[in-house]
Image (cartoon, rainbow, N blue to C red; front, side, top):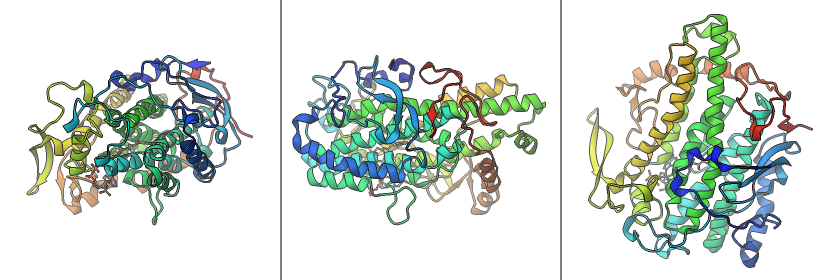
Length: 499
Ligand code: BYC
């Protein structure tokens, strides 16, 4: 049975969705719609990389479930009305393929100094190094997240959730393939070396870590996983959307199709946190507990107290904000003005000339012990702009979570901490700032950070909840069942057949 894209695409801006069918060779050794068969050199390079990828998957992919039959969706086309098929697959047999969104005839570069020129079909020589760096950074995050989530299958709160975890994992694997295709096809020997290095770095490893900070953090439990898929995959959405505006057309087309899959990852995060909240509110109401800060009694019910959820969210929001790079950045300016990376929804933005040579943007900075808004040349503030768009995009799910709490009659509201809270990159780096936006002394920070970020007790408590629930139709105490099954399957459906 095929899935229509409309149910998962609400997260993806309409302007960057594909709208035509392109034939996919799903019988080929590497499923693709890039006519791989006609480029023998490329095919050979990818076939050399493939076994190394499979070794990496066995070594660093989901631990313990490689022989399980998992009910997965596999991308088989790029038609928005039916691009995926569902069926049982053993993860190592998943058909990782290379899929680009349809080419838009006559597409032009949407921003920067080449605005209006035909989009590049080959690497623009003068920007080769910068383009390669962007692709490598994007590619590096994909296997990193699989590594971070490696042990979660063992403590899955249901088979439904376990299946969603594995779906996210195999699709991150496919996103790695998407970037490796670009490296190998367009960057020759350098590209092949970078493709290999993507399999060699390891999340959290001291001597060869993943490139960006958040991808070296641990994802030790399912709350982290849901927060990660809501907040960090949303950085993925924003960055992919910005790269979908690239003047380098193969990158744009790769990212446009990746966004189709990304929507499900965000869904997993939003509904995962939402179902956790539902379970908490239901248990509190059943026990007659009205005060969300009555933590000991709430935890005794086997659910997650809401203040702890806020601390978890604070952690994931702050480390994810660092992924946008420094708010003021010459790299960001160069990526935009060269036309390699746009802003969110660039081609649709109105109100400026998409070159930004004379524009300004407001950036909050720390000056003389105060937080001040400064007008900065807009080109240099491109990263800040994407971060601001990201923060606005985060709010929708938070509002929907708060509705669940309000409906349950509990007086508590989840919120986003101040932009500068707990930051290690950019303008706020090296400053101690509270979630409500006050600059603090080191002493004040040390006295209070345990109220704002998960503390040792929190982590130990979450650890006690992480007991597997692997019966079909069963759910751990701390999470409510989903409203509907994957691909409309019933509540009792066996999403993973564990051998
Ligand atoms: N940690 O001028 P700066 C996803 C480095 S997530 C460590 O401040 P720039 C996904 C930076 O690399 C989306 N280092 O910022 C989600 C540079 O180093 P080099 C991933 C950092 O370069 C979930 C130096 O600091 N895609 O897809 O404008 C699951 C100065 O950089 C960090 C992309 O990010 C950090 N947080 O921006 C799976 C898109 N931040 O080069 C997947 C591609 C900065 O001087 N990448 N640095 O050695 C980019 O557009 C840019 O590289 C960045 C950084 C936005 C990341």
